[in-house]
Image (tube, rainbow, N blue to C red; front, side, top):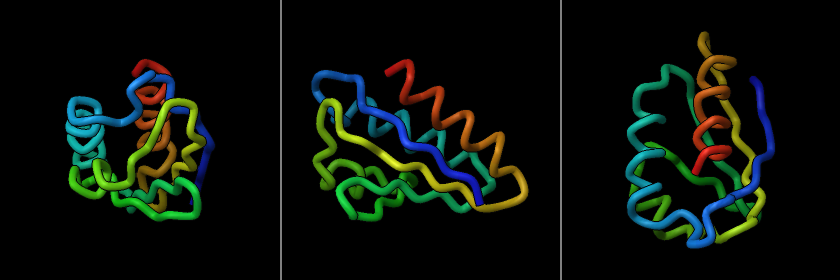
Length: 84
């Protein structure tokens, strides 16, 4: 298992458009992925879970990846957060 903490850099937080993009990226990953925000576990493959979590600007998000391609998957997700 690998993990990394990232910050949400979009001033509007994770709203519809970034949630849809994050879901698309996470769905292409082979690892089990969990996001943790304020002690809430979020499945990034479920856009409604992302939307209902109300992730805001500058929130800390811990990304957890567990699986054969965990390092590559973590890098894809970190890149998403760095460029959002």
